[in-house]
Image (cartoon, rainbow, N blue to C red; front, top):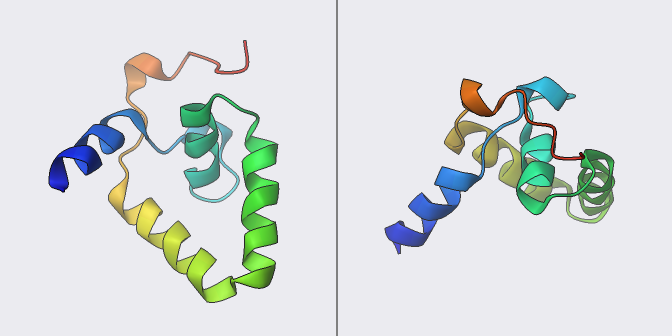
Length: 79
């Protein structure tokens, strides 16, 4: 069970360059190759219906994920 988490963690990072708070939504948007605004809207909508769960998942993701490495910092996923 730890192996898939390590593989996911290898590809999913926080994105502080495009962050509003901690970079969780921007990092997830980079991983999914989509616009960060779409992920942020989805987070807000889920927060309206499942506030405690959404906050818990966001904080756990912020604590568990690493910052985006500096060699990938100049890559813009939207190009």
